[in-house]
Length: 213
Image 1 (cartoon, one colour):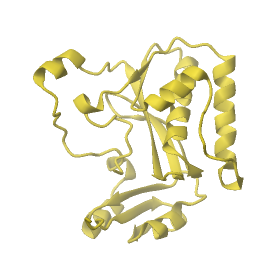
Image 2 (cartoon, rainbow, N blue to C red; image 1 turned 180 degrees about the vertical axis):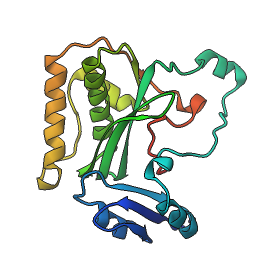
Image 3 (spheres, rainbow, N blue to C red; image 1 turned 60 degrees about the vertical axis):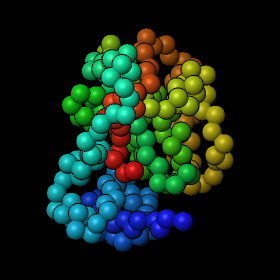
């Protein structure tokens, strides 16, 4: 059995900031802290260097991507439509601390972000991110499309229902309030925005990815 690699966690915004050597220590700093900023690194040196920098310079940063698909497959898929926004969620545990955001697909400029929530799942975050994106684009009279890498969230939006198995409790009360608002919005509003599955195998991680894998 392979040994799990140790991670170091940089917290830019939290109850306390700094570099922490365990997820539990990091979680204590971001729990119940609105707008917490944090990311994991593989070495202490990288985490310490990041602390001196800006969170936005590290979030969503991934290694250069090279697709394993054939040239014929890549040609068939084509390039992303940059007249779009991309949404994604990140959950540390399932359930666990969760947040979601939306960005401009081409520039990766952050358009909205919510969380971290004390207890949520990745699927709930992906669902909320799409609905938030739909409302955002409608409010701005935008004809842009939405990219997501979650087939589950797309199906939930189409059904106008968040089909999570996560049970409601005091820890996730605020999250489910958002879920209820999202479902209500879907049932009361119409939209023409097209929701498209991001082609991860061809294009790499979705631009809204938090880069915490």
